[in-house]
Length: 127
Image 1 (cartoon, rainbow, N blue to C red):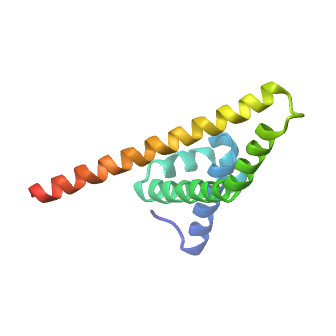
Image 2: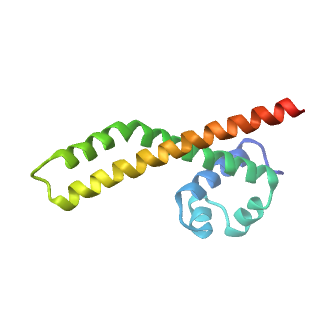
């Protein structure tokens, strides 16, 4: 991309941050201090797209880490509701159902991982 050095890099970074925070191109451009047409032009550039994708991936990875950090507390809360005889039956059933569904899903994922590993090993051995 063409530009005047450090100022351009700061604008580009600001535009990527704004794209991650704002619901529209128009609002992102305004927040980044650039015109909407400039942002649209940058979005067509491969280098900008790559940096934007990397920033989105980093944001999602951070969110996943936060979710994983809270997973234990979530399981504790579900188990507490499920076991609390004073909780409404509908809440207890919902908590139990959630625990079972997630447990089955985790089992399915583990089985798929095993099958994929077996297929990958088979393919490597054929080559």
